[in-house]
Length: 199
Ligand SMILES: C[S@@+](CC[C@H](N)C(=O)[O-])C[C@H]1O[C@@H](n2cnc3c(N)ncnc32)[C@H](O)[C@@H]1O
Image: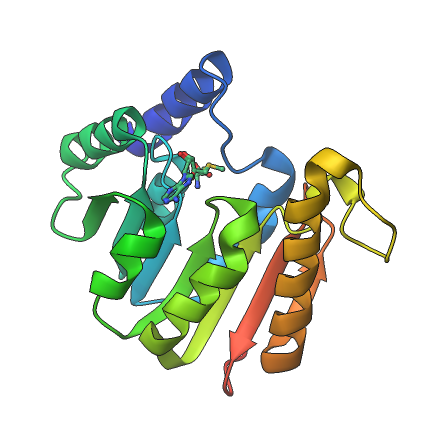
């Protein structure tokens, strides 16, 4: 087994034992298929966690330079150790901080975005990211169906009200401004294409 495959297994086990939410198996195949068809050259990921999806991004888009943002210092350090151990530091840049503060410091030209940070902030993030998007780009957002509560107009349970209403707002915005498909895999994956982008 090569080092990347070994790391995948290690990180999956770590995520399980430390209750770190990572890309679920149910949506992984779809995510990788969208990623590989996109052939991105610059990727921005919001929500690195311990570096599991970052590892998938790096392995399945070997031509891409990746920026990934994480607010939790322990998780950021773990992701950094993976980057260094795999010799990826020339093309994977981990940023420690609040995505809303970090995004405006980044350079434009991203053609693949993976939104996987706080679900209630997707709308805020896409507004900050839009000036950084290439003319043709793919925006993938995870958990957009949030336990099945997002579809329809039903009033969500009080404790999830804000997150569900914000995800509905995100989906509605992405459908009206991008060619957007919502996939039911896992917790729901939204794939939005900018400009003439086809995958
Ligand atoms: C679902 S996890 C990311 C999982 C990762 N993408 C993967 O599949 O391996 C979401 C991450 O977003 C981070 N996060 C939460 N709020 C954030 C913020 N304001 N800025 C940056 N990261 C944030 C959390 O600490 C958490 O590690």
